[in-house]
Image (cartoon, rainbow, N blue to C red):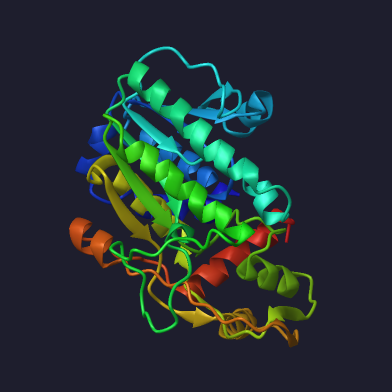
Length: 335
């Protein structure tokens, strides 16, 4: 399956070869690296490390060491829980902290665990980083930390002072990310926060609450695309290959105590996304707008800060991202 993302890995590793020298002979410790974004961090690390012969090592925290060692040869896995894991020995130059208990959030069950993981887990990471003499921590945060975007505000920039509505249970996720940022920005180890917005691409979970994967799955199964809302909610989608490169840049070059938006500015409504997926993939499925949710919301970042500071832009359009995602989905099923 990696042959289908080879061009993406080449694009990532081809960016500023001098930057990758900052990883030479370094050890990285990562949490939350067995999910969608984590998969890309692992594969891009293996590719970069081999291409430049960096002699670097990546250690990932996991609850299932054996399973992931078999899946990702060349990666060191530390078995444990983010709240009480045993520290691996030695110095670690960099830490990528992305662990979040998203399962309970997506299943709409007990959201309190999100705050536990963010507070206790981040305190544990800081404790580890101090002992490991870590130079830098990259925190994988979320655009949800901004709370709701006013409908008359075109983009959410890093100076937006909004926050999640504490009267709503689903605000726990965004608030948990804010707690993590608060802890990391108020300790002695340099830390950068990547507030991640919607993304798409290979390895995106097929069973999720996200519109993109649901619509793609419907086309794959030749079933009608069903939009539960009125279709007017808008999002933007940064291709996962671009997002992964941006995260590496922030780890190696992001400024201390700074927040950077990691997402696309190209706005699209949920209804138009369904139409684009249908037309791009030449599908004959029907689109049903069920209209069960009347609320309209926007969730569009401004990414001027990261683009101007590091002279980057996204390389893959949404249409191409749809094609790449679908080709990978078909490949996973032997088609």
